[in-house]
Image (cartoon, rainbow, N blue to C red; front, side, top):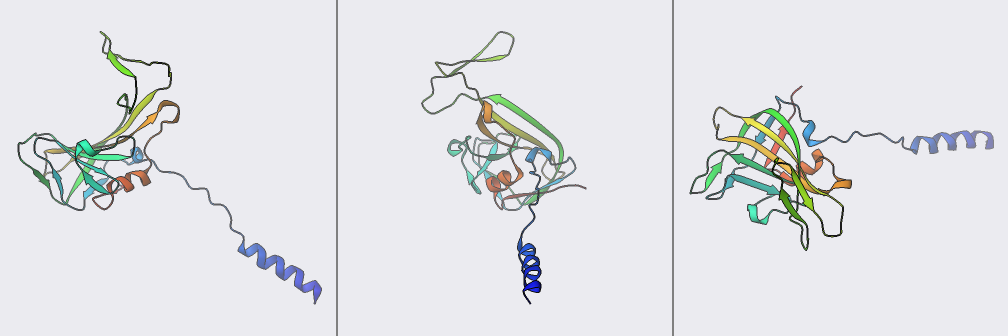
Length: 185
């Protein structure tokens, strides 16, 4: 009986052990062109603005956006003096572009940005030689019904040595139920 008990216990314990599964992290910028971006709930662009801003699964005014946290903005071409409503609609993603730009609007920062004569940007730092970047992804959109809506911009500010692209899970947290993406095959 004792001879049988040891192998049975080993089999039982080993069947409970989990095998670590390696998961690949997907980046928002890896969405293939031809995918569909769907506005699931109507969005509002305030008067005299061209962006509907989303962060923390809520729609926010541009002035309330915290660029140090993941955010997304649906952008229109035309500036109008009254509120503009974006209905629930599908868009084709025609192009995906990654970008990074220096960012200096830090709270309590003494950093200052200057533009040189050859259009390159330079930063002057007080005593800190770290760099701050706004890492963005532009998704260019196309719709026969709403040609004025032409892109979605998502991003986040990072210190230079820790900067990275936005994860798909962070995009989903930023837009909540307002927007979803169906990748093309």
